[in-house]
Length: 348
Image 1 (cartoon, rainbow, N blue to C red):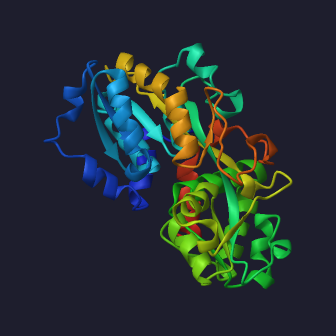
Image 2 (cartoon, rainbow, N blue to C red):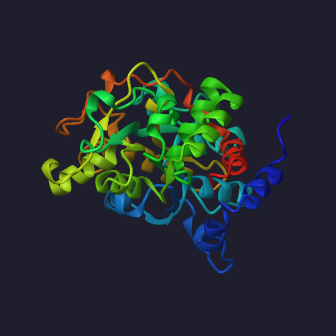
């Protein structure tokens, strides 16, 4: 039986994972929602400001209305929207992962998108209820330090990183939304019992925790750990910034539809009761446009999912060559159960 909404939000609060967002966004003095109307738009963005502010600045011009953006963690902002309910200030939710969008879809918070918008993206990368759509894709990979391990010895499965030979040699970011989405994917693919055991084995094997993917990549480059569980695009951004010869880590794309090769999406959904639907739809159309999709391809080094745009990032494997597990991304909505499991295991 599904727990009441208030109970699930309370559970997340009890986990201590939502307080920063609520503190940051919950001011009674903030009138941004009432100012939004349908001539303006309030975006709750689970995507990092550094990554998406340039394209959101262009979006404001494209929709021809004032756009206000609140940045935060995707899970925290989804919980914020659930807490606000029908009175949410958000008109558009830009999520770092499918799970947070699925959580809002499950509670009927999102408006159904026009078929023309949905058809821009392969059905594998949009919500089954037609109320959210993926904008860009990122794949989970293993980063490795070539001074510590040869490419041939890098594991081909996340199940292998809990083996004794990798004791104290693996880094990961348990509070990162993409890691949590990957754990949720493993729960969907392999069940809760198997996933809990993998997490327990990972901890028992001395895997080191970091604050986020970039810190994990830093640790791999510095040789603190030999392997790191990260998203692909952080490495490509660093290479674009410094040059590949200046980056002391390499990437290994996992074969065989391993759960560690999950392709998750950053996506977007419209809050149906916000009174900002028309402007929000213009924003969705813009984010699916060639200009925005090219931005995601060139600037954030993710895989564009619409507008026929193909990534030209040097060395990035073609999207259709990736061997991601077969999974309904809409089923990644059970984030609260993943958070509870991570807490029970002592990883958050």
